[in-house]
Amino acid sequence: MNPEQPADAIIPETILIVDDNPEVLRTVVAIVERAGFKVLSARCGEDAITLARETPGEIHLLLSDVDMPLMSGPELGDLLKATRPKIHVMFMSGGGVDGNLLVLNYGWAFIEKPFLVNKLVRMITEVLRTPDRSQPGGREFDSRADKGKNSY
Image (cartoon, rainbow, N blue to C red; front, side, top):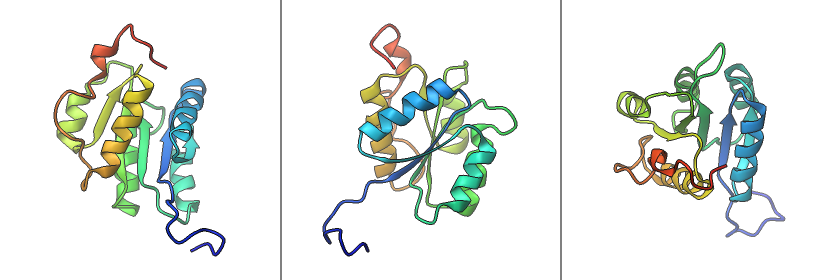
């Protein structure tokens, strides 16, 4: 514990964000930081693995794009879960990925790009508060209904 930090201080959760599109990565990092989370970011799976290996503290959530060169989001999630079994996993994609399959096959959360800022933050919070790695049921986070609204 940091002696300069009050004993009852709330330490923000750490989110590792991975996306091969620099503009999307910058935008999502800014959104998540503004929401009060500590953020680590990487542009590919290999960099994310290295960053996770070099990060001594807990990483609470992986928020990764699904389709990336060399290593997909699900492959990255599997690798990180092997070394950090308590990490929650959440995916994002705008490339026609069937999020239902990710949720059914892995039990991992999925949000479709583009998404509303408040919906992303709310979903991250829900996933972090879920005792296991699955997202809550229902369609409240289904971003397909958000087309045409103010999204990132």
